[in-house]
Each structure stands twice: as structure tokens, then as C-alpha cells.
Length: 352
Image (cartoon, rainbow, N blue to C red; front, side, top):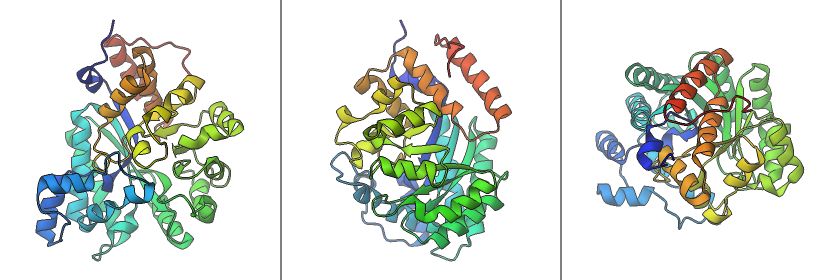
């Protein structure tokens, strides 16, 4: 009998598809960068700042959850800070045996001190290259449009994604406050993305209902859905997502904190998984949610009673849903499968 301990889960190869750069910094780094850049922080000590930035379960909404990003973004306005934050995030992933991660960010949030959008992306890509050279982690970069900005800004970001396709950027996202900011307003940027054969993922069904997911799928052609907690409210759409193997990037801790679900007991992750939906586990924001990918797997085990047999398919779902070329993905999955089976987790060959 395999014991699903923290150390065992940590030792397994894992993929993370939904992780925001500006929400996953080290607090020590924020303090050092603030000192270097003469940025005033809301708290003076490491402990106080950690408590301020980690929202906790008492958080009441997505809007409240997003407030600490003003602090993290305040120190991510230089090339050096962006390189460092990217590098350190990959280093943290390597420590818990994450073999593949997609890091997402919106370049428009990092130009307040004069950086050009291209310089922002170049810095993140430099951090990615440096980290990949030193750690056993493959990294893809996703550029985020933001719902609350103008469609013109989204289009500019989409043009950047097109320019950096095959240079480290693997996808385009639409993130930010969901209620009152419909995805269809940004359809021109996604038209450009889709017609340049770039992967798409959209935050949807987190702070708004299944109609938000419907828009993401049918108005802007999302390949994956970020969160999707409210998908269960529309059975027909739920079946569509399942039938078309559209992955859900689920973030259990974050979903409770943002009140996408009221508590762990009401989270649909196990319901979706049991239906056969391609569920993936992710952190969303390691710092803000005070979590790691290993922690998220342990929540699935302890709160939702995922078995060893089910955990291996959760892991494979992450790799199967990666924005990678097929040949590269298949080679990676073969390596992952071999490692899982060496750990006693045997994969059924009819797994879809």
C-alpha cells in the first residue's frame, strides 16, 4: 500500500500550468528589492509583510485577493527584478520536483518606471533561460491580457505574444477581475492570437457564472479554462468541456480564498475528476495563497480523499494539458510515466 505522505508527493514529477509570477515571489526578495529601489512597503518586518501579503481564508472576494499585487508589482519594475523573480520561482519549483511550469504575467503591469513592454518580456525570458540551464525544469511563458483594461491594451499584448511565439512564449491568457468585465470585449486580441495558432487559456467561472466559461470557449476559443469552479452550474456546458477534453486549471486554496467556493467542502474538484474531466492542480499564487503545488496535492488527498491511483492521473493531466509541441510533450510524458511506475504508480494504457 502506497502511503501518500507529503514527502512522497513532493518526490513525484509534477506539472504546474496556472502560476502568476507577481503572486509567487519570495517575501525576502520583495524586501531586498524594495530597499534597493527605495520603494515604501506597507509593513517593515518579514513576518508582518508575510502576513500582509498572504491573504488567508478570511479573504472575502477576488477583488480583495488581488490587492497585495500592488505591493509585489511595485518592486517588479526593473529588468533585474523580473529576471530574479522568474529565476527564483523556477528554483522553488525545482525544490518540489516540478518538471514543467507555465509562468504567466501581464507585461503592462511592469512599465511604471520606464521599461518598454519588450524589455519586460526579454527580462522574464532571460530569467527563464538562466533557470532552465541550472534546474531540471522546463518553462513556458504565458502573456496575460487583463479584463479591466481596454481592448486596445489587450490587442497590444496579443501582438507581443505573436512576436514572441517560438521564443519562449507558449500562450495567451485573459486574467483579472471577472464580474463586469466580459471576455467578449477582448475578442479582437484573441482573433489575432487564434489566427496565429497560439495557445489560449482564460480565467473564467471563478468570480462569475458558467456564462463566463461559455464566452471563453465560444467567443474567444479558449483551449484551457483557468479555475472553472462554477462550470457545474450548467450541465450541458459541463458535458461539452468533458467531451472535448478541455482542461481545467484548478487552484483549490485560491478558490476558497477568493470565495469562488465558500469552503473546501463545496469545491468541485473531485466531482469534476470523477466525471472524467481533465482536472489539473495548480497554485495560482504561491505567495498570496501561501501554498505550493505539493500542498495542493495534499489538499486533494486529505480534503477530497484522492487515492494513489487517482493522484497519478491528476499528475498526468497536468503534463497532457501543457502548451508544448506534441513530440516534446509525448517524450516528457514517457519520462513521467516511467518515473511514476518506478514509484509504484502503474499507468493504465487506455487512459484518455
